[in-house]
Image 1: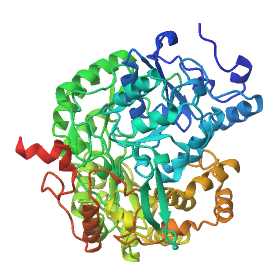
Image 2: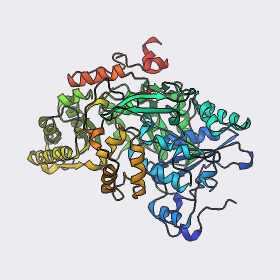
Image 3: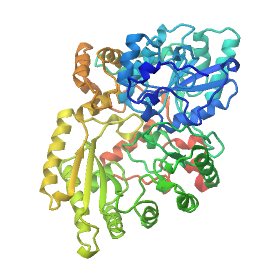
Image 4: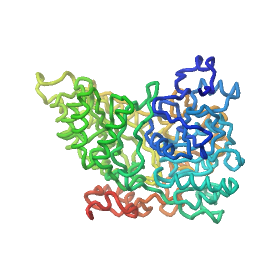
Length: 621
């Protein structure tokens, strides 16, 4: 019988105590005495968010298949428990064994979004692990980071011993074997890091050093340990139907954000949207076989008892066997009370047929992501979506009985004009007008258009990594302008406009393209009480502004500045597959409003063919 780390008295005083007790259905239990490596997997946000992350579920299953390894989990304690743990000096603990995280060999932290960075410090601090990697001793865990934000690890490089670039199925076992071998021969922490640096995809920040110019840009990025490579190469799993994928996903006791069985049908994307980091860093597109997915659908639904199954992908409409898979899921599980949840699909006859079968028409809404209001801007970002296609899709949906449409746009895209912004309001109105061309007796009530805008943030390894980002004032002015234009539309009463917070976007922009000078800033804002920065009720913008001033850092240096092709970018030492020359060419195409065909139409020579498979080789098979 395991003993809980928190007393009943504490559990009864915190919100949702089930966040901290573990013992969920399908949780892995191992005898610790027979284990060589203890690995604690962390999602640095609240339990409900972390338990929804597919990547951790895959790695949890993969690690626990090793007899010598026990993988457990930890999430950021919510603010109520955080306070109690500090007052009572309770070390942060893993859910499975309830043992302190500081007793583990590894602490693996997934980096999914920049605004969780202060929570990384919270996890280390509560775990009683030295925050700075260089200050850790032989008995402290090896702290390793991975995920999309690791493609620019520099703003948080002081806090990690290692970063893993790429997909976890490829070389993690090699890393664990290297750790075991080093410990067996009595090797030191540094000797393990040096051995790990020889493994492709592993980045050890302590073995590198930036040199800066007087203007604050990077002059050079130097290797200062002979074991470290000049370039760290992203690792890609090319055989998705022959690799790890869980059969017994964890089932939480409480409602989490994504509380369903998830089928990852493919990785990567053929579309080449120029703002989309995921579409670039996960190239090339690779599909899972239809047989593999059918088998996992059966297995996971049986092992979890879930009543919903969802398809996961960046662009599900591009999956070659989508129609066969979806109709199989409907026929096989629909009659058994299992809901089939679909991601945003391109609206065509197939999609509407599917949605009419899996959704309650009266309750559903359809989602379009035009991203920009004008065709010119959609060409700039390479969206590959025309107004004609959008309006036809909406009209087909209206004729099928839908009367609610959600539209997603971005404000502040490179080269945006007031005409482009007004186009968002005009397009919203045009869709509403389409609805009212249907005879009144054939309509399903009034139409509802919900148009939402987020602010554009340039990300590493995208064609826009060089571009200037708007200031908070410029973003808010664009927002006000669009709000005014929405009110001018004929169908303004049918259109609801939602928007994003400019302050959070500014910080996201700083952290996305930042360098090592931001490490101390992060520590300072954490000491000022900043945590859960992506939660509006916890966001302390004033504390961030104070820290910028105290550290003599101008946030606009990282956001509102155009970069040249020759500038050394903080992430240039990473080989993500797509080449810098390709990204620059795409940036020039964007400025010239030139559309680049998708990967199945024509190869654009992005560099991802070096991985030897996926869409790059489809026509050769």
